[in-house]
Length: 134
Image (cartoon, rainbow, N blue to C red):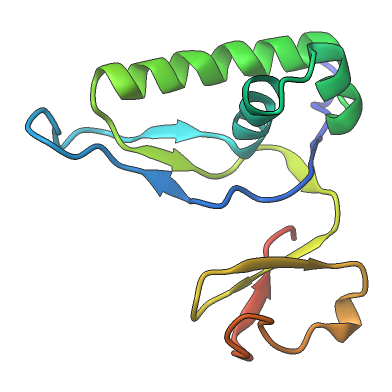
């Protein structure tokens, strides 16, 4: 019996939920599902320029786990770009660094270390907010 999968620690939620191709070759096809931890590994390694060891410490998973997640993420992104497919960023086994919230009205994301102090969106003052990292 395999051991239970460890949740990846995510510093902050992605700024976008999806990316969609435009242009002549755009097709109505199945979207690629990129998990949040795949996005986070890709961001840490390719955007932030960290090593796999450094990313593993931040995400609180093994270095080999980072390598496996990174390989899956690269394949999915290459497939989406090559085949002009939509990329949805959602799901996975992860936990967030802080309490993260999303505004239903303006779609902004913000965090707080004290959940009791969140009453409204800091951008548009809407009361219609929900916690993302439940």
